[in-house]
Length: 489
Image 1 (cartoon, rainbow, N blue to C red):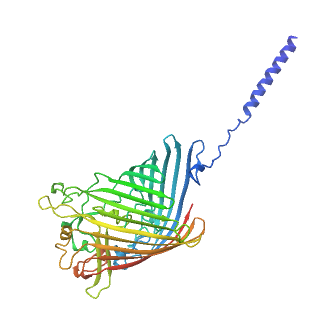
Image 2: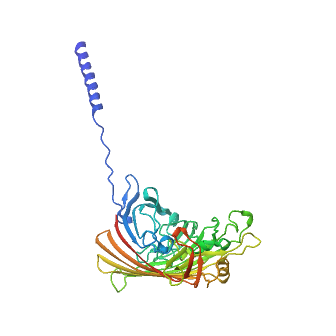
Image 3: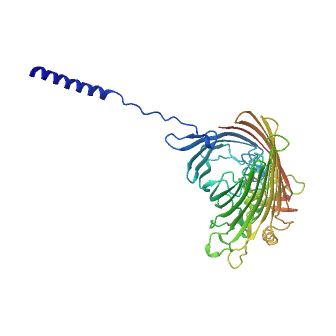
């Protein structure tokens, strides 16, 4: 019995050991796969990030452009530099490509939706109107938007609260239609937006002026004839920023369209009378401002989806709110003439003018007035073809004191008046053969109506290959065109 009992226990122990070994070799049960789920509450294209309650959307576009007879990409008119000079240094055809990528995340919380948005683009170009490249390997990286929205607040780089939903593109047009505010690449800001229901909202914002909102602040004591010929009225003496622009907005956005009123306060602050010497003193700081009214009318009787967008803007000491975006502050266009070597239209947009080399002879800042009207009519011919007609009119006015400071020596001997106006009109037609693929062609005419007249002997300007000669002041007009292919995803 003892032998039988021992054999039985031994066999049982062996079976237990074998079972344990076999169990260790068996694979563990896999966890259930967390499939990506559609997040429909924020619109098409959103998905839940697996394991979270955050929804994400990836998007972007790829764009190829060719600008004809412009000064840079995206149909910039030939209104300065080598392009404005119409010399052989200018590129008459400018190729530009862009890949844009954006990331949109949203999470529902007890305080409302927490949103982050990031938009960056990779650019490659054949160079501006004067040749050359746009960065490493002829390319560059840009960040348009990067912001967080929470409980009505916006922190980061976003569309200005001063701007309209269509920014500088009332007709999905060129980036160089002036006559109003344009910050399509975003403005660093801290803002708060209150929603009152029925499409009514109001916002207040502190916005960084250093990137896009400072025009020139010229000290005319540094004015030279060579600089004057390129639309520069002296030494640009803007100081570093001290107070951000203070912006407010009231908007009504409903099915019929949109109405908006915006206002901004802008500090105008010079560095020194002698920019290399702080003991030279400086003029007192002053404040400029800008106001804008905007109107959009949708679903016009001309056809489904048709719209009309228009803005009217006025500024004092804040000209970038009228001539803004990627447009420069100086204009210089050459043409033919029967008097002297050639004709020339020259103009400069500045927030203010002052003069002096130190505190003993320095003047106060004279602020510049500007106003502009910009708009477009957009028509859909059918689901595949659409056309927009757009235009703008901008005006800059220097007061009598500022005019006297600009028109003193060495700029003398002709009828001198720095006031000017710029008129633009253009059209773009788009063909969308399949969804999210658009081919378009755009043409625009820009006319610089300057107020100088007579002739002036100017020195050579090597940057644009112009010789020292007598030039006649004369208004100038230029044509530009752009071809584009864009795929949105």
